[in-house]
Length: 455
Image (cartoon, rainbow, N blue to C red; front, top):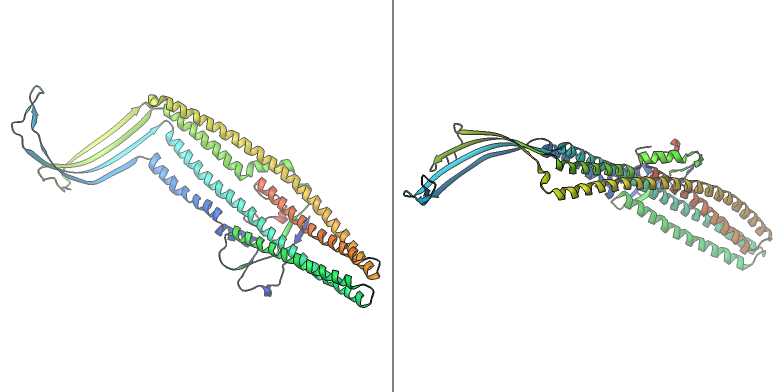
């Protein structure tokens, strides 16, 4: 197992006062507090408790209604009356009648249909569970993204440092060409070519510096960091190891159990199952019950207006109602039940599709990790060969056995191979992050555990 540490570009005394120095662990914590996407998922979890209480109070326990005060003053004039046989006649004593009334009332009511109370509780529990899983998935995605951005910035910084080292090497070769020219061993053309190589290498360094600055900007955006501070990244060990010990089938089993997307797909299936149960409740009788307690003061004229005394009449009533609404919207109920069955079947198929996709992703990422490991080994071996070839080419150039153009070809070959090694190291880490994202949890050896809660 190989662990590579990326060197820091400057000592601590070179860091400006307005620079924010970050480790990968610091970046993880900062992202949890500042990344807008994760904050939205985290805020949504805060609805769980209040919605659970609302479900209990509105669906699972009786509803309470209290009327504290209701007073009114009424007058009516009846010009028609009814005789002993029920026929309307002229009212011989038609006149205005006035009366007043003040009431207070307490009402308790409760209704359910089939297993609606249990289904309501199950649905709310699944909604809460889905929010928790969404937060966990957002956190996992954020951790992977922060690692990608952080590692990418380290890669760009290491490439920039490599370009700086190449500038130093080019200047050494320029000095050699100038010394040989002063001894009349080489021509002025070699000196100019060496100077051109230094300038071109400086240009490559400037381009790489721009790439590093863009990588820092992308990291800052992922962190959700505010403020003008520049970022200074601490060196971080690269989790590079021989992946031959990773069992692909075991990784697939872990992914089927831990992958956040699969967990949410399972919750979606259970929610669809609750939807089927809710539609079946429409075929069950509906039970309604309640209790009313009413205090009523009623007097002629305004005698009961604003009357809140305790010696007035009290009315109590209890009711129990059983209805069979199976024929109310019969065809609509059948349609909704069929839709619920189809939704459940589709959710199951979506869950199966997600599992197949996760298995493919895990196996493909595992293959890519092995390919990147072999690529890294070949790149490191190629760098050893290129360094030895450059060393011999420089000796031959000093002895006059090689032209500067030949030496420059060796320069370029060694520089490109050095860049390939750096890129191969970080490509291995990218492949590892792809695999861990597919599995849903870290798979690297314990010694190379990731920063974050699961380290």
